[in-house]
Image 1 (cartoon, chains in turn green, purple):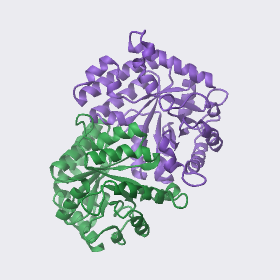
Image 2 (spheres, chains in turn green, cyan):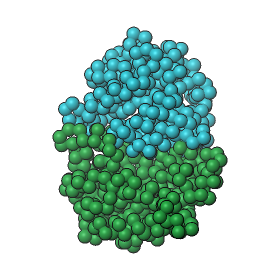
Image 3 (spheres, each protein chain N blue to C red):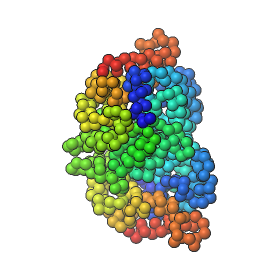
Length: 296
Length: 296
């Protein structure tokens, strides 16, 4: 089954388009894991491996898809890359989809190697096959093609960066008229139409910063079949308001990410009455789902 | 000592701005390593580890800097990431500089994690500290700042993608008037002036595809202090002609990369009279240095 159809069936099951990002910052791990992470980089990698397994156990029945952020694993070296693989593997075992947020992009043969790594199981299953990958399109159309081919061959999805959620996104992405983001959106629309799922939506998606709800409608018009990844829900200043233009009447068409809003929930003073990090995390998950449901 | 000054002293010692890229494609390894790589991904990772050590032994006295291409290591999974770390570590031991070609770029806190990984030794020395890193600037000025800070703090260098060597680079990089590449070049010029080496050249560099020698002069004017990384010498269609605008009278101002021209030299029919891969590789290195020297 194609990525987008797997995604929608998982969203239907969880009754939510909420996604949780895994950005393991060691100083924000729940206490038992933070203590274990305090030794060497290998200790830290083992601690986040255990933490992610426990976290995925909490998320699995509630959340359709997780989004590991590769950078926070890579900084722990080879053991960190192993922890990344383990989180992907375990989430898949628990029935979740894995959207790898690695924002790769390079010239053809190198893009091909990145696509193989994350969408093709790596060389001889060296890495778990992810369901989808974020791609940086800056290098150009030919540089994106290996990702498109891998996605098609392996029923995987892609999310091309069209407009990112950081304040400085304007510096280059707003260049020209039409803007660079609009030009890329038009290209992503073409790619989307060449790899459609069962119904309205494509396997080929786009990242559009949810902190810019005003622009969402414009991008949706440029890319009517393109599922969106809306990052930045919560800590980056995105809110659930104004997101409804991204979705169809079935609640399909976008996934909305929260990372710190879930991962740091155990630090919330207003949840002090809950004794363990698991309860606080589970509460924040339900809260996010309700906020999102209210916005649509 | 700052990166650019270390680089220039290594270039002076080797009397060449030639750089060799490590893009380990398993089906193009010299025979003994290819056989050893044929098993599992871990076998392949061990084989390329040994191969790179042998290759670095050949290069160390002739070539100032190597450029590992992260993608070809990542596809071998965690063991591949360990092989990448080993190649960096060994090249540093042998006195070479390491320019990591990972083309990372993300929003602030994530860029920070990537910068720490490759320019800061990772978390508790989880990864060897590289001398320089390629960065994709698409996400914007604020997304590039963590890399600039890490570079300054650790005397490291950066090479921002300004114009890449693939034919499709035109699709987005030529957008607008001035083009996106020119806008980025003007920004890189500003950054360059804020982190200068001892003399004319900055620690902050740019990638400009050497297949576009006609454009080199224009970019050099926009970025007079910015050292260039000229990829694509050899197999990608770049030639040594027309590169002289990139260099000053001391032969400083750019490094010129060849990957397949060196790594696949052992397959050259015209070198059949040399019995071992080491000799063929050494020959191709000298040949590249001579071609480059003739062009300046």
